[in-house]
Each structure stands twice: as structure tokens, then as C-alpha cells.
Image 1 (cartoon, rainbow, N blue to C red):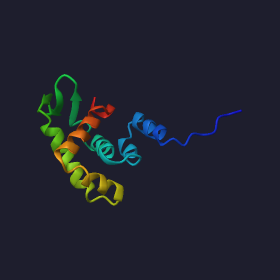
Image 2: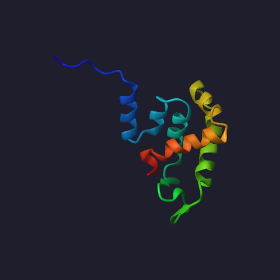
Image 3: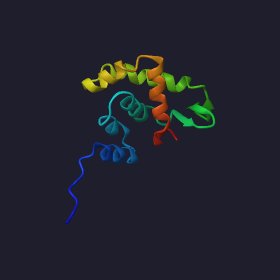
Image 4: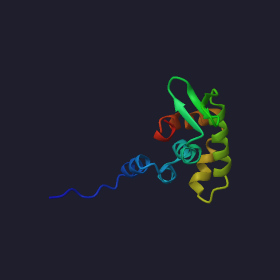
Length: 117
């Protein structure tokens, strides 16, 4: 007898993330996690996270440590864009990420995403 199909949204999220589709994965999440996936969909190739050095920014010739300044700039651009989004959940998530603590939370989640490795 076969197992019934799972309707666990976590499976779909993990599948999309593994396929390198962070924007699609963002649609399945909320709050800081949604913003982290949107950051991954927009800033891949411009910033990466290294456990030893922290956030690095691409200068055009090499990766340069910048103490998170580039990552924060990218995140702020994503938040501004998200506030104009047509999806209420995205607008709500962006509004919830106005404080320094919540933005650090987004960057902490993003640091673990494969797009930033």
C-alpha cells in the first residue's frame, strides 16, 4: 500500500530552495524568512557570507569584507521594493523588518541560504 502524498509545505520550500528558486521559496514563507529568500533572489552574485569573514561584497574583481554594509544596503533595497509589492504578505513582512534587530534577523537567516555560500 502506498503512502498518501504529503502536503507538508516544508517539503515544497526545501525543494524550491534546493532547485535554486529563492523567489518561489519566498512565496511559501513569512516575515524575516520571506525577506531573506527575496534577498537571495535579488542579491546573489553581489554579496556572499563567509563564516570566517562575515558578509563580503563583490567589487568587480574580488570579494571584499565590508562589515555587512553591502548586505545591509542590499536588504534595504529589497525592503523598499517589498513595500510596493502587490502581495499583502510581502508588504507585511517588509513592514515587520524595519528595526535593526529584525534586519539582523533577516541577514542571519540569509547567511545560511545556499545562494550566499
